[in-house]
Image (tube, rainbow, N blue to C red):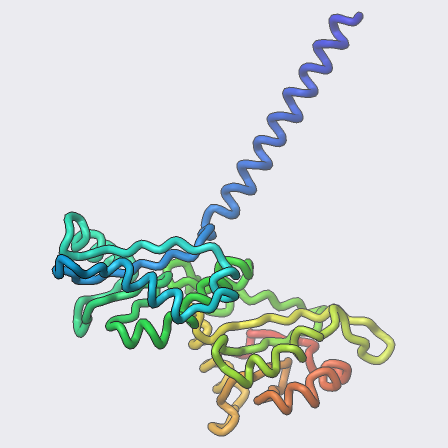
Length: 271
Protein backbone atom coordinates (compact mmCIF):
# COMPACT_ATOMS: atom_id res chain seq x y z
CA UNK A 1 0.00 0.00 0.00
CA UNK A 2 2.82 2.39 0.94
CA UNK A 3 4.45 1.68 -2.43
CA UNK A 4 1.42 2.94 -4.37
CA UNK A 5 1.04 5.89 -2.01
CA UNK A 6 4.63 6.88 -2.79
CA UNK A 7 4.00 6.45 -6.51
CA UNK A 8 0.95 8.74 -6.31
CA UNK A 9 2.84 11.33 -4.30
CA UNK A 10 5.72 11.33 -6.80
CA UNK A 11 3.27 11.65 -9.69
CA UNK A 12 1.61 14.61 -7.98
CA UNK A 13 4.97 16.33 -7.43
CA UNK A 14 5.91 15.78 -11.09
CA UNK A 15 2.57 17.15 -12.26
CA UNK A 16 2.82 20.24 -10.06
CA UNK A 17 6.40 20.86 -11.17
CA UNK A 18 5.39 20.57 -14.83
CA UNK A 19 2.48 22.96 -14.28
CA UNK A 20 4.81 25.48 -12.63
CA UNK A 21 7.24 25.22 -15.52
CA UNK A 22 4.45 25.84 -18.03
CA UNK A 23 3.25 28.86 -16.03
CA UNK A 24 6.77 30.26 -15.78
CA UNK A 25 7.27 29.79 -19.52
CA UNK A 26 3.98 31.53 -20.29
CA UNK A 27 4.92 34.48 -18.09
CA UNK A 28 8.37 34.66 -19.68
CA UNK A 29 6.88 34.61 -23.17
CA UNK A 30 4.36 37.29 -22.23
CA UNK A 31 6.99 39.67 -20.85
CA UNK A 32 9.77 38.86 -23.32
CA UNK A 33 8.70 41.65 -25.67
CA UNK A 34 9.34 44.33 -23.05
CA UNK A 35 12.96 45.43 -22.66
CA UNK A 36 14.55 45.14 -19.23
CA UNK A 37 16.58 48.33 -19.61
CA UNK A 38 16.52 51.58 -21.49
CA UNK A 39 19.08 51.19 -24.25
CA UNK A 40 20.99 54.27 -25.39
CA UNK A 41 23.07 53.91 -28.56
CA UNK A 42 25.60 56.72 -28.98
CA UNK A 43 27.59 56.80 -32.23
CA UNK A 44 30.48 59.21 -32.62
CA UNK A 45 33.38 59.91 -34.99
CA UNK A 46 36.56 60.13 -32.94
CA UNK A 47 39.93 60.03 -34.68
CA UNK A 48 41.80 62.28 -32.26
CA UNK A 49 44.23 60.10 -30.33
CA UNK A 50 43.88 62.15 -27.14
CA UNK A 51 40.07 62.40 -27.32
CA UNK A 52 37.55 60.05 -25.70
CA UNK A 53 34.21 60.10 -27.55
CA UNK A 54 32.70 57.53 -25.19
CA UNK A 55 33.46 59.64 -22.13
CA UNK A 56 32.02 62.69 -23.89
CA UNK A 57 28.60 61.05 -23.82
CA UNK A 58 28.91 59.79 -20.24
CA UNK A 59 29.73 63.37 -19.19
CA UNK A 60 26.73 64.71 -21.13
CA UNK A 61 24.48 62.00 -19.69
CA UNK A 62 25.44 62.93 -16.14
CA UNK A 63 25.10 66.63 -16.89
CA UNK A 64 21.61 66.50 -18.46
CA UNK A 65 20.04 63.84 -16.23
CA UNK A 66 19.84 64.52 -12.53
CA UNK A 67 20.70 61.77 -10.03
CA UNK A 68 16.94 61.46 -9.43
CA UNK A 69 16.31 60.97 -13.17
CA UNK A 70 19.04 58.36 -13.49
CA UNK A 71 17.72 56.43 -10.48
CA UNK A 72 14.26 56.01 -12.04
CA UNK A 73 15.06 53.32 -14.62
CA UNK A 74 17.80 50.79 -15.34
CA UNK A 75 19.83 51.79 -18.39
CA UNK A 76 22.43 50.31 -20.72
CA UNK A 77 24.64 52.67 -22.72
CA UNK A 78 26.33 51.54 -25.93
CA UNK A 79 28.91 54.17 -27.00
CA UNK A 80 30.36 53.30 -30.40
CA UNK A 81 33.09 54.91 -32.47
CA UNK A 82 32.13 54.47 -36.13
CA UNK A 83 35.83 54.69 -37.09
CA UNK A 84 36.64 51.56 -35.11
CA UNK A 85 36.21 47.96 -36.28
CA UNK A 86 32.55 47.08 -36.48
CA UNK A 87 31.38 50.55 -35.51
CA UNK A 88 30.24 51.57 -38.97
CA UNK A 89 28.40 48.26 -39.45
CA UNK A 90 26.69 48.57 -36.06
CA UNK A 91 25.54 52.08 -36.96
CA UNK A 92 24.16 50.92 -40.34
CA UNK A 93 22.30 48.04 -38.66
CA UNK A 94 20.60 50.36 -36.19
CA UNK A 95 19.62 52.82 -38.91
CA UNK A 96 18.06 50.01 -40.93
CA UNK A 97 16.28 48.54 -37.90
CA UNK A 98 14.48 51.78 -37.09
CA UNK A 99 13.99 52.91 -40.68
CA UNK A 100 16.28 55.95 -40.57
CA UNK A 101 18.35 57.23 -43.50
CA UNK A 102 21.75 58.91 -43.50
CA UNK A 103 20.34 62.09 -45.07
CA UNK A 104 21.29 65.24 -43.17
CA UNK A 105 22.83 63.26 -40.31
CA UNK A 106 25.74 64.72 -38.39
CA UNK A 107 27.72 62.99 -35.67
CA UNK A 108 27.37 62.32 -32.84
CA UNK A 109 24.08 60.41 -33.17
CA UNK A 110 21.94 59.14 -30.31
CA UNK A 111 19.23 56.46 -30.67
CA UNK A 112 16.72 55.86 -27.89
CA UNK A 113 14.23 53.15 -28.81
CA UNK A 114 13.15 54.14 -32.32
CA UNK A 115 13.99 57.84 -31.93
CA UNK A 116 17.12 59.40 -33.40
CA UNK A 117 18.85 62.66 -32.48
CA UNK A 118 21.63 64.04 -34.65
CA UNK A 119 24.28 66.49 -33.50
CA UNK A 120 25.48 67.35 -30.01
CA UNK A 121 23.03 70.21 -29.40
CA UNK A 122 20.03 68.13 -30.50
CA UNK A 123 21.16 65.33 -28.20
CA UNK A 124 21.65 67.73 -25.31
CA UNK A 125 18.19 69.30 -25.69
CA UNK A 126 16.28 66.02 -26.20
CA UNK A 127 18.11 63.52 -24.00
CA UNK A 128 16.11 63.96 -20.81
CA UNK A 129 12.68 63.72 -22.43
CA UNK A 130 13.74 60.77 -24.59
CA UNK A 131 15.11 58.98 -21.52
CA UNK A 132 12.00 59.54 -19.39
CA UNK A 133 9.65 58.63 -22.24
CA UNK A 134 11.55 55.39 -22.88
CA UNK A 135 11.30 54.61 -19.18
CA UNK A 136 7.53 55.02 -19.25
CA UNK A 137 7.28 52.67 -22.22
CA UNK A 138 9.08 49.97 -20.23
CA UNK A 139 7.35 50.32 -16.90
CA UNK A 140 3.79 51.36 -17.75
CA UNK A 141 2.66 48.09 -19.28
CA UNK A 142 -0.40 48.22 -21.49
CA UNK A 143 0.27 51.60 -23.08
CA UNK A 144 3.45 50.90 -25.02
CA UNK A 145 3.45 52.57 -28.44
CA UNK A 146 6.59 51.40 -30.19
CA UNK A 147 6.70 52.04 -33.94
CA UNK A 148 8.03 48.52 -34.54
CA UNK A 149 5.06 46.81 -32.89
CA UNK A 150 2.12 49.19 -32.98
CA UNK A 151 -1.06 47.82 -34.63
CA UNK A 152 -2.65 49.15 -37.80
CA UNK A 153 -5.56 50.42 -35.69
CA UNK A 154 -3.96 53.21 -33.67
CA UNK A 155 -6.64 52.84 -30.97
CA UNK A 156 -6.35 49.06 -30.62
CA UNK A 157 -4.23 49.19 -27.46
CA UNK A 158 -6.36 51.68 -25.55
CA UNK A 159 -8.75 49.82 -23.22
CA UNK A 160 -12.29 51.15 -23.21
CA UNK A 161 -14.99 49.48 -21.09
CA UNK A 162 -18.57 50.54 -21.81
CA UNK A 163 -19.56 49.92 -18.18
CA UNK A 164 -16.78 52.14 -16.83
CA UNK A 165 -16.15 55.85 -16.79
CA UNK A 166 -13.13 56.74 -18.96
CA UNK A 167 -10.61 59.58 -18.93
CA UNK A 168 -8.08 59.96 -21.75
CA UNK A 169 -5.30 62.22 -20.47
CA UNK A 170 -2.68 63.52 -22.92
CA UNK A 171 0.50 65.11 -21.59
CA UNK A 172 4.17 65.70 -22.26
CA UNK A 173 6.86 64.88 -19.71
CA UNK A 174 8.73 68.19 -19.98
CA UNK A 175 5.56 70.33 -20.07
CA UNK A 176 5.42 72.47 -16.89
CA UNK A 177 1.64 72.84 -17.06
CA UNK A 178 1.26 69.06 -17.47
CA UNK A 179 3.40 68.53 -14.37
CA UNK A 180 1.22 71.03 -12.52
CA UNK A 181 -1.96 69.17 -13.59
CA UNK A 182 -0.54 65.75 -12.70
CA UNK A 183 -1.57 65.86 -8.99
CA UNK A 184 -5.21 66.28 -10.08
CA UNK A 185 -4.96 63.22 -12.34
CA UNK A 186 -3.11 61.24 -9.66
CA UNK A 187 -5.81 62.06 -7.10
CA UNK A 188 -8.69 60.69 -9.18
CA UNK A 189 -10.52 57.89 -7.34
CA UNK A 190 -10.82 54.30 -8.55
CA UNK A 191 -14.59 54.81 -8.93
CA UNK A 192 -16.96 57.76 -9.18
CA UNK A 193 -20.49 58.14 -7.83
CA UNK A 194 -22.91 58.92 -10.65
CA UNK A 195 -26.27 59.44 -9.05
CA UNK A 196 -26.56 56.52 -6.65
CA UNK A 197 -24.26 54.23 -8.62
CA UNK A 198 -20.54 53.73 -8.09
CA UNK A 199 -18.85 53.36 -11.48
CA UNK A 200 -15.25 52.13 -11.97
CA UNK A 201 -13.00 54.84 -13.38
CA UNK A 202 -10.31 54.10 -15.99
CA UNK A 203 -7.62 56.75 -16.45
CA UNK A 204 -5.52 56.27 -19.59
CA UNK A 205 -2.36 58.41 -19.64
CA UNK A 206 -0.88 59.06 -23.07
CA UNK A 207 2.54 60.66 -23.50
CA UNK A 208 2.40 62.64 -26.73
CA UNK A 209 6.09 61.96 -27.43
CA UNK A 210 5.67 58.18 -27.30
CA UNK A 211 5.20 56.17 -30.52
CA UNK A 212 1.99 56.98 -32.38
CA UNK A 213 0.29 58.90 -29.55
CA UNK A 214 0.72 62.15 -31.48
CA UNK A 215 -1.40 60.68 -34.31
CA UNK A 216 -4.04 59.66 -31.77
CA UNK A 217 -4.11 63.19 -30.32
CA UNK A 218 -4.50 64.80 -33.76
CA UNK A 219 -7.41 62.48 -34.48
CA UNK A 220 -9.05 63.35 -31.16
CA UNK A 221 -8.63 67.07 -31.88
CA UNK A 222 -10.50 66.66 -35.16
CA UNK A 223 -13.15 64.33 -33.75
CA UNK A 224 -14.04 66.73 -30.93
CA UNK A 225 -13.74 69.85 -33.13
CA UNK A 226 -11.19 71.33 -30.73
CA UNK A 227 -10.40 74.96 -31.69
CA UNK A 228 -6.79 75.98 -32.26
CA UNK A 229 -6.46 77.80 -28.94
CA UNK A 230 -7.36 74.59 -27.05
CA UNK A 231 -5.11 72.25 -29.05
CA UNK A 232 -2.56 72.00 -26.27
CA UNK A 233 -1.49 69.64 -23.53
CA UNK A 234 -2.46 68.87 -20.87
CA UNK A 235 -5.86 67.91 -22.27
CA UNK A 236 -8.50 65.42 -21.10
CA UNK A 237 -11.09 63.76 -23.33
CA UNK A 238 -14.33 62.35 -21.91
CA UNK A 239 -17.14 60.66 -23.84
CA UNK A 240 -18.45 63.80 -25.59
CA UNK A 241 -16.39 66.64 -24.15
CA UNK A 242 -12.86 67.74 -23.38
CA UNK A 243 -11.01 69.86 -20.81
CA UNK A 244 -7.98 71.77 -22.07
CA UNK A 245 -5.32 73.17 -19.76
CA UNK A 246 -4.50 72.82 -16.09
CA UNK A 247 -7.18 75.22 -14.80
CA UNK A 248 -10.09 73.47 -16.55
CA UNK A 249 -8.82 70.04 -15.53
CA UNK A 250 -8.41 71.07 -11.89
CA UNK A 251 -11.73 72.89 -11.59
CA UNK A 252 -14.08 70.73 -13.66
CA UNK A 253 -12.82 67.17 -14.21
CA UNK A 254 -14.16 65.46 -11.09
CA UNK A 255 -17.49 67.27 -11.31
CA UNK A 256 -17.87 66.29 -14.98
CA UNK A 257 -17.14 62.66 -14.11
CA UNK A 258 -19.80 62.73 -11.37
CA UNK A 259 -22.20 64.13 -13.98
CA UNK A 260 -21.59 61.00 -16.05
CA UNK A 261 -19.58 62.66 -18.82
CA UNK A 262 -17.02 59.83 -18.79
CA UNK A 263 -19.62 57.15 -19.54
CA UNK A 264 -20.12 55.60 -22.97
CA UNK A 265 -16.65 56.37 -24.31
CA UNK A 266 -16.09 54.72 -27.67
CA UNK A 267 -13.82 54.97 -30.68
CA UNK A 268 -16.53 53.75 -33.06
CA UNK A 269 -17.24 57.31 -34.24
CA UNK A 270 -13.67 57.82 -35.42
CA UNK A 271 -13.22 57.07 -39.13
